[in-house]
Length: 88
Image 1 (cartoon, rainbow, N blue to C red):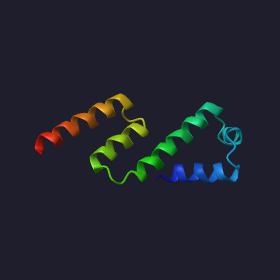
Image 2: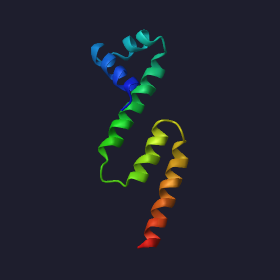
Image 3: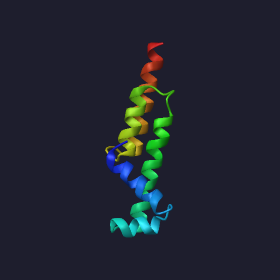
């Protein structure tokens, strides 16, 4: 997890989980804070999925970080799974 994420979580904890207080602290809207928190939750869940292959985890991470869109990530993972099945 990046230092920026750790700082956000620390502030979130110190503000007792108040998204409104975090929005004030960062000078952003409530929906922006909610989106940030949702992405952090996805990162944490992604880290908990140890049984997946590293390539799939990498692609999901790109989607969580908004480097690629979710539909593209799904298509890449599906194609990867198909190719792996052909190898067997």
